[in-house]
Image (spheres, rainbow, N blue to C red):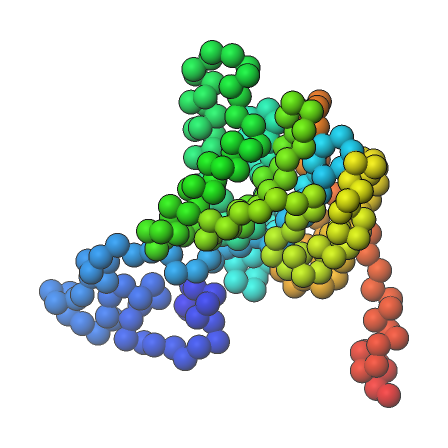
Length: 267
């Protein structure tokens, strides 16, 4: 069996083992070491997470992501948290490769510890703007080395009475807005978010923001084959950071009976 989902469905090559490292039929004394030719970089993500949604609302920033990590087309891990707190006023949500996300988590946790050990004053705590700037430099540096981190990242936070929400991807591209989405959500959910949020987020209450994200996550579950009906919401405001337990989506599928060609209906 080929263990890489990107190769599933392709013609089998029996000259190499499952990990494409040594020719099977070659004698051990002359077997070629595939890793001796140079540093091998990740060519594409393998275990991935899909969309992350984020909006500004009256009191801060709210972010949502489902709990699925897909191995190719297989819904493999169904209890993954893709929302990560950074310090006391920042939250990040990550799409893309899960191992690269874990690497970023380690980088950011180390950065927070380093800042804490200085211990000079609370005024120098890392805020969301600083975290976003740091991530943009990390992503651009890795891109420049032709070894990118295969992620799209949303950075949200609330500090000194101001809300912050911005985006950075594997190329180091950055922008900020009052509503942002990654992955398939950038096509399906973002128009729904913009219809409610853009220009009016200062009037949006926490309850209305949660309902909006809930509705958008339900739409994504209907339309995105790499999503799941379990998700979490992170809230950042003047009270700090809170990440909810997994929530379940209320879905209905009986409308499918009215679609031509579905089930027993043939005409």
